[in-house]
Amino acid sequence: YKEASVTAPLIFVLSSGADPMADLLKLCDEMRMIKKFDQVSLGQGQGPKAEKLLNLAMDRGMWICLQNCHLAQSFMPRLEQCVDNIQADKVHKDFRLWLTSMPSPYFPVAILQNGVKMTLEPPKGLKSNVFRSYTRMNDKYLNECEKPKEFKKLLFAICLFHAVIQDRRKFGPLGWNISYDFTDGDLMMCQTQIKMLLNDYDDIPYMVIRVLCGEINYGGRVTDDKDRRLMMKLLEIFINEGVVQETYNFSPSGVYFSPNCETGEDFMAIIKELPLVPHPEIFGLHANADITCDQNATYKMFETVLSLQPRVSSGGGLAREEVIEASAKDILTKCPKPFDIDMVLVKYPTMYEESMNTVLTQECIRYNSLLTVMSKSLAESIKALKGLVVMSPELEAVTDSIFNNQVPKMWEGKAYPSMKSLSSWVVDLMDRVKFILTWIDKGPPACFWFSGFFFPQAFLTGAQQNFARKNGMAIDTIGWDFHIQDHMSHESTSSQPENGVYIYGLFMEGARWDHDTHLVGESKPKELFTEFPMFWLDPRQHRKKPETGIYDIPCYKIMSRAGTLSTTGHSTNFVMYMEIPSDQSQTHWINRGVALFTQLMF
Image (cartoon, rainbow, N blue to C red; front, top):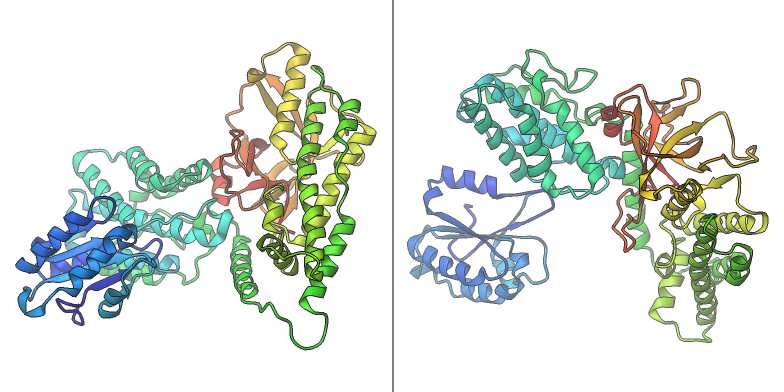
């Protein structure tokens, strides 16, 4: 602030998850400018209002903050003119212009050069996040509530919760399916509502607080239903009747607990004693989650290094073009021929009694689209490398991806979701085609490789349809019974079940299947993924779901977990919820991030 002047605006360069308004309002209060402060959130139609307020502020010596300049592209040239026309001798000496903007090419360069630039990064780490929350409070604020003891306890709990859900993002999809930008504004709103509810009610309405925080304040940002389920379960740990008692632990080890403090300095002293590197237990995760976190950071670093790799090779060895040509020829040699759809339709005609025939035909059509694009683009790329045809941008993208061992975008558009490198992806594709060819040649398998389906939801619907038509039932009344066949293997299974289907090929993250207790159990140290036993999906009409003794485990196609809604009404990633036996509560495994996948990254 001391470096700024009436002609030099103060510019906040925003970053995801950080909101400078709380600090700015605090400064206004300290400088006794809170009554002469105004703000406009820029957007459609707000330009004239902002300009009028700017002129008023220059006359009366006000502070004005124009928020989110990156959203008002059309107003930026006019803002630049207004700032250029400011004459220091004709403007009130107390006038200050504050601007906030994400990095944007539309932001005026002249304002950026003349202004005082600041950035506010969200704190890294759980300890620093909680500490920062308490630097914005004073003892007067802590004692304003009519129930000061309960308020201080719940205040610490919600600040710790805010830090947990922010820091949980570092675990990638294991932490959140989608990385959300929770802000300080969300926390401040929760604090205000907690104080209001404590003042208005004799008994603390914990359920109301959880709904307000989890479904509205923070939940308003959450778009994935699995993430919303997780948030509500995490809130149950931080907002409950036990928090206001003398002793309450947020983590099993007791490292994170509800302190009995009176002043802000006491709270800060407790926060300073917290571990610098938090143990995964406070996030509800297994100790193996630290390995996942480190792996994510390493993959991200190598992706950056790979993007900076030069395209021209120097020194000895094969030239870049020779490496790409050799890889392309190898993949083209391995690339299977498209399926003969006419032959498949003759051998497996569309039948009322057997829906799997339609599933097989649809799978063949989908794989054919991919195989055709692959073979054509590979042949064209090899010709382009030799100079026989023009190297188009599409072909150049294919060759770059082959050199980087990545699946080309052109193929991804026709392919099933996958996070594998190109070499692993080609092997996986050959296994999938082999699975379909075996089905065509030898008939439906006794046990289906669930990972081999392009669109597994169609397979599940086909299995339900067979049962419904066989017994003359409505398909929308059919549900699944889930039986884990850990005493069987798909190699030794010779016949299909009387009803339903056997499936295999799933992997579990965050936990493991205990073959001794026949229950889901804790992961072994350094064991991030485990193969899951065979499932028997047994269709049942008007099935009543068990209320206890199970965990509703989400099943995804790939490990990114996040997906989009496709035109079929299904997610591009999420397949279905499955039920597995458990002696722990649902909350335990939800916080652990336990899920099933049809394929891994390697």
